[in-house]
Amino acid sequence: MSTAGKGRSLICVLACVAAFLMIDRYTGPAREAVTGQGGNVTISFALYFLALIPLARFPRRRLLAAGASLLAVQAFEAADGFGVMQNVYDPLDYAANALGVGLALAVDWLWGRIAHRRRERRNT
Image (cartoon, rainbow, N blue to C red; front, side, top):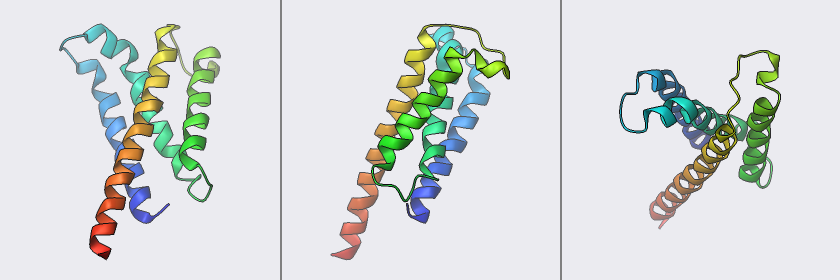
C-alpha cells in the first residue's frame, strides 16, 4: 500500500470517527435507524480501513481486511461487547455491520480505481 493509500485509509477512519461522534445529534428522517445502527455502520467502515494498513503487503488485502473486520464486529455483537463495553442486542446490528464493511469495500475499490486512472493519465 502506498503512502497515498495509507492516507486514504486514515481519512476514512477520521471521517467515521467524526460521524460516530455526531450520531446522537442526528434529528432527521429515520432517526431511530441512524441512532440505532449508525454506530455499527461507521465502526465497521472504519475498522475495514484500519485493517488495510497492516495488511498492505498481502495479496488480496481488501478481501482479508473485509473478512477480518467483519469477523471482529460480528464477534463483538455475539459476545455482547466482549464484556468490556455495554452492548444492547439488536439483530439488525449484524446487518448494519455487514453494510458498513460492504460500503467500505466499495469506497476503497472506487477510490483505488480513480487513483489508478489518475496515475495512468500522468504517465501518458
